[in-house]
Image (cartoon, helix red, strand yellow):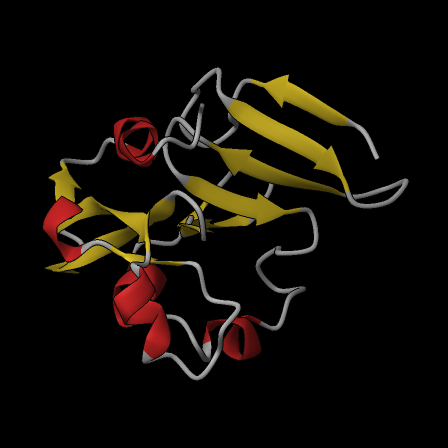
Length: 145
């Protein structure tokens, strides 16, 4: 499948990845604004009720529809070796990107785990908040390294 860097149709950032799903449809992930969508997620054509059934309310509240009627949702990055980036807050007027790094678990911690394949855990001491800056939050956990 092909992947291109394009100008985001939602926020006009130059850091939007357009990736082919098949011959006729693409997915989009904008690092500039921290939203994602695909050509199938169009208002009136997609089962949003099913899709949103597991999303936090804030993610549903922050959905944005572009000129092509595609619904763009905030991204969650969950990289086992680097960390997690997600939205936290209590309303569309009071939210931020939140980033938490992971760290390698200690031998002592590993002894108490039933799943011996686990090598990393979130490091609560590393949590940081970024005012509406997805790229900075992603960079903080090392996604671009």
